[in-house]
Amino acid sequence: NFTVSGSHSFSGSCVTDSAGQCAFTYTGTRTGTDRITVEAAIGGATLRTAGENTWWEPTLLLTPKTAFAQVGDLYTITVEIVDLTLGMQFPNVTVEFTVSGNHSIGDSCITDFLSQCTMTYSGETVGLDNIVAKTVIGNLQPTATARVHFWNLTLTPRTATNPIGAVHTVTAFITREAPPRLSGTPISPIPFNDEIANAIPITTIPFSHTVQ
Image 1: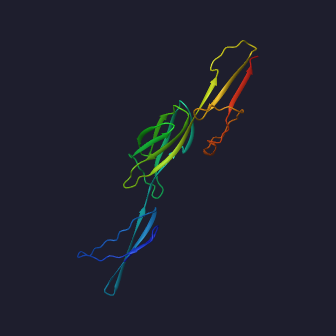
Image 2 (image 1 turned 30 degrees about the vertical axis):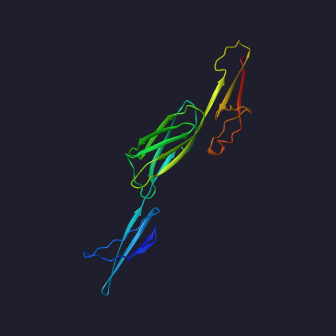
Image 3 (image 1 turned 90 degrees about the vertical axis):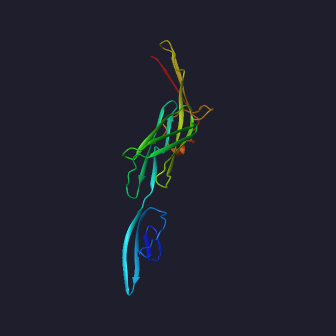
C-alpha cells in the first residue's frame, strides 16, 4: 500500500511480480515536496519504508513587465528562468520572443549561467506592443508576457534664428498613438505606470523665453 502526503494526497496499491517488485505512479499537479509511505504485510509482519519526491516548475520572468520608451530608441527586455522550489539554474536554454501590436517581431536568445538573456529591438512607430516569451523545458512550456508603450516627443520648430530681445516659442508635442497628436494643458513630470498608460490626458507642453 502506498500513501502520498504533503503537496499531494494520493493512495494506492500494487501486487508484486515474480521479482518481488511492483510500481505505483501518480502525476504531480503542484510544486512542493511529497512524502511517500509504503507498507507491505508479509505473514504476520508489516514492513514499512518511506521516501520523498519534490516537484518543481520553471517560471519565466520578464523585466520590465510594463515600460514606456521613445520612438527611435532601442528597447531591451530581460527574461529569467527561475525555479521557486529548488532554486535550479537553467543555462543554455533557448527562449523565443514574439512582439505583436504596434510592431511585429520574432526573436530568440539563449540563457547564460544566471538563467538570463535579453532581446532588443528598435521602436519605429508610436503605439503599444505586447511581448510574449516562451520556452520548452522537459514537457513544460512556461510563458510570460510584458508590454511596452512607445511614445514620441517632437519639438516645433526644431531650429530657429531670432534677434536679441525677441520672444522665441517652441512647442513640444507628445504622441502616444497614431494618428492623434496630443494637445491640451501644460504637463509636469508624470509617474508613468501601467494604470495610467491610457489615462494620461491629451497634453501639449508650451514653453517660451525672452532672450535678454
